[in-house]
Length: 109
Image (cartoon, rainbow, N blue to C red; front, side, top):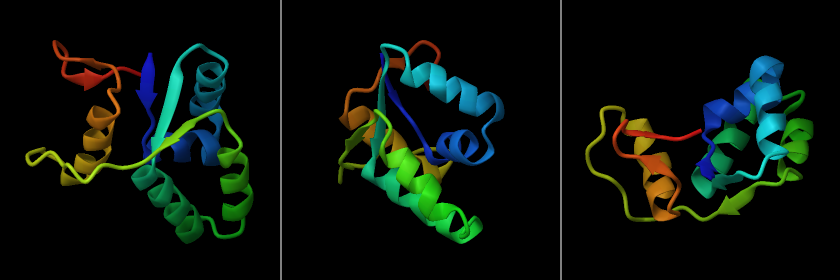
């Protein structure tokens, strides 16, 4: 299964660890393909530098060594979503054919 990670997932997994960190380890060790778009990559890097400047570089360096598919972001954007912050992430997920369950209307993760 192709899974698109977003900034919040990355922050919880790489900054706070806990259950999110354990889940990330399980996903990395699984047969799933984990994707991070350029938009999410830049947002994650920026939030790390803004909120945790003392450990931002170390966390980012570790994160970049992970077995993720770092992919480009598309210029084609969805036009209508309840939360406009999700437009870029969901547009990139659709562009890269990330698995989507239309019956339940969410991206599987």
